[in-house]
Image (tube, rainbow, N blue to C red; front, side, top):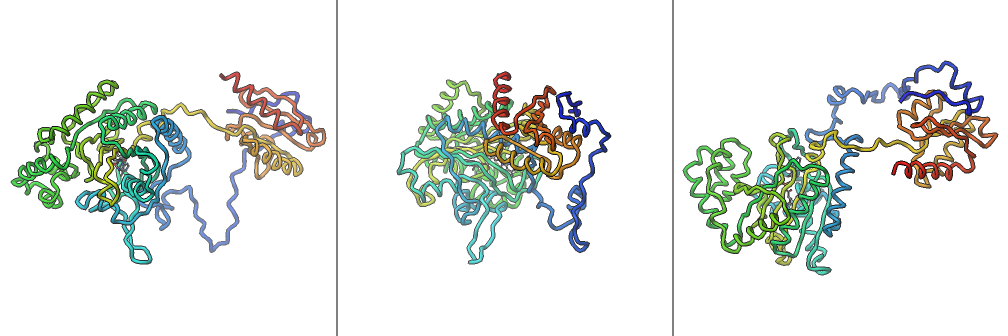
Length: 475
Ligand code: HAM
């Protein structure tokens, strides 16, 4: 936005200041650091990447431009989650390693290869959480949340850590929005969870995704499937990777989620769970499908969807996209009825899912119609006394909830106007010595160029009224 010519209502001293030749804004001076100190130029990525302090591979900064998108997604997600009665829980990022190895399963890629595990000062094995479900179940048991109300609905938002090979859509620190429902065996709660995931995606405008659905059966019917799978894999071991040769015996379902191409080829013709489901699991799965049809939520039956964690039984689902290459899962979850009791808690059924924030943000990209944000007032102060008053006025405005800025280093009016422009300020108050003396100063609307004189003692009220009027006009 160009700096506009000031109107005649501008006080004489300021007009003179603006009209005289103003130099290009000065380049920020380098801080005066002793020669022995680190004179790192942080704009030079190449230089910083050679230093030991560069961020770790797979761990990235989420910059302000992106956090705006994240806030938008999170706000919409919270609205949907709360409409379904979910309440937020925040669990620690570090837990005892055993919590994850027991919950997720020793043979899974997550536990066998991907966990950030370390010994603390007392030699206890701790792990940065690779997912949220195990921690939420632990908190549910430890805090006896089930005593308050039989059905508990909990959500959380935060970082997870997996030592995977970083690539597009796959990071070592990534973030999930995670939802868990305890205390109902389904299938109505299954339908509610899937419906919530679908609404969440609809509310953030991502409709070009597909919902994959499967049932993994229960402890009654899954052993027969596992046996059939073991048989199928027994004469194909030479084509399997080393890990899967072992898994083919100990936990053949895990061969399904191996990332090695030849293992994927082998399982592509493997028997599907569908024909092994017991009557109760079949009825559960059909009831869920009927309800999704009633809700007009389209889904694809995917008999290979076993998901990479051992705790699932019956319903599993994944929301997939074709726009992120190999990392096609944007959300995934399922039922895990045995986990609470496995961890020493009550035998309470549960179902949940998690959405990957990086992947969802990548799908949204730059398409978001986010309103450009900027301060409601920039105080362009000229001279020591005005600059000092600006600090006080800004504090007053901020305590009234308004975003106010002033120039920390001073400078000419033109350069301050440029800064106000760059910050996208809605209004600029121009104050010099004369204005301080008269108690009145020019307040400029940076969008329309209109300018009015305001009483400085009444600044907060005038600005509030003006913003309210502008908002009303907009509505
Ligand atoms: P998950 O499928 O491992 O499930 O992860 C859920 C979502 O997190 C994925 O669909 C993906 O969007 C995202 N995600 C996973 N790994 C990465 C990564 N390395 N980089 C970026 N995004 C990633 C779970 O974590 C289960 N705890 C979900 C659940 C909740 N099941 C029941 N309740």
